[in-house]
Length: 290
Length: 193
Image 1: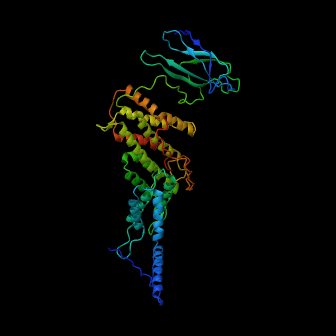
Image 2 (image 1 turned 90 degrees about the horizontal axis):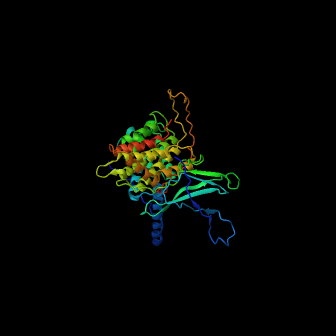
């Protein structure tokens, strides 16, 4: 199906000029005006401006690839040229919406909070938009599907994220408000980063030849983290200082030393088990939806 | 086990002061008292008793001679121990004080803070253990991420009608504004040492 190219007529030079010199000048001026007008009328100026603003906001490492994806998504948004085929079915539209929402959500890292929140709002609007056969609003099933996709694309193992999804997913028929949407997506992205850090940590602990870690060492590290996360009654600053003193290198070194010195070596700890147990510490602090 | 007084020689107090002691006007805030133990036989110090005279905070440093080969090192056993809750009041100003070897920490200090600096130097890391500073860096980031999520909960309700939940009978869908995130996302790279 070839895309039909619309070609516009160039603005004809104004007739009735007897002076040839003036005619050429006015033709050039007319052509210049018409180009600017043309760009503005088709919306390219506005579109490019929006694209450049997005690049500035996201500051991607590969701007050209970023722009390519951006325009690809733009193409999805405009209606398919009629006449060449049927309009896409409901399922395809749904997938497209999900894809677009995911793309928006990945534009900014969650630590760039303002940009991230903006993108969350855009993604929410994209998913909530009403369609020909769709009521406006975000339903629980789409929301849950989105969260699953975020976690899957972030390469976190299924067993690791399953408990989180159970906590934050919504039931199929429920209407999901923006605040819940924002909290849920943020939590997923933060968990992905947490799991990545846990993976890096495991690499520090593991025996490179065996790809497993000494259970005493892994347990000691997890216990230290768990201890630091225990909600103490102290107010915020004191709690952070206390955690910092527990998680500092000296205190960790002591903990590791004690763990290895005291006990005999036992069954090694695999990466999967370590990630699962670490993620459980995180997920325990997540407030379930409801 | 009986307690035996250890003969000691208490030297006069020396003021710690910036600048010339004779010419500068103000009275010094920090005084150092040297206590030496002339007897050669090794002993284990259990208790120090003294009468205070308007000292607010006390630190005790000990220099231990462990063996002939290792040079003697100064070790802090007590740091800024409070003798007078309010230095401008009389409370504690002329009290008799006993410091025991295993002093229980005062109630106001949080447990982790009242640990005196351990008298032994941290042991050399065993072979095969991971680098503690790198482990610490990763664990601190994981902690920070978890704290951030713990702090940023939403109070909006989804409007669920759960028959099983006796208390949540009516959950109205009120679009409350999410609480603005007061907790900044911060990356702590080995700040805590």
